[in-house]
Image 1 (spheres, one colour):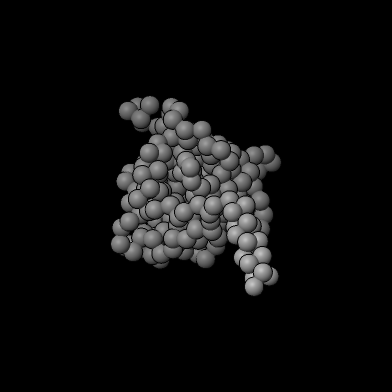
Image 2 (image 1 turned 90 degrees about the vertical axis):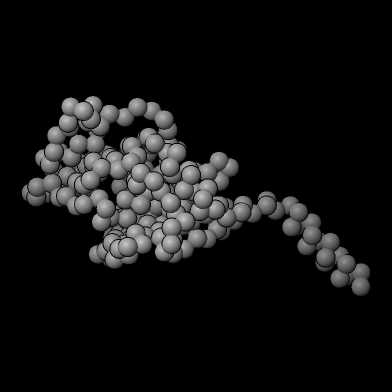
Length: 202
């Protein structure tokens, strides 16, 4: 009996010493956070499908705009201008590759109004006690792929995402600390070789 009591007391003491697990963040909280995220910049680390790693700087201007500037020697530039995602790779002999933004999972977080509570949008919503992970897709076009978003709480922050595209490849972007609320000109989101900035976009 004393042994059983000792074991119980010991287990209770260990449990009290452990940090309390963070609760899973609600889809409403996460939607509100993303909708409040208007502009942001910061460092990122990208883990590609083949295991290679790239680093660089990201600029976000919601809705619809994001820019990935890769660190040397990588000269790749990826820009979404609100309608199109352009990939510029000076090392290749190809022209700028362009894809409709709405056909990429990235459009889910760049949308003017993010609503993760929409029917059939979220296909996974889990917590490991430290982070909350949401797997989301376009409800009307799940064939476009999905995006896994990883958040921490207190305050809510987006820490990384994983894009699973329609070709079956998986790309992870790990974000550094984001600085928010600065003014970002639309010139930063012009896709070289594809378009020019309009006067009313300045």
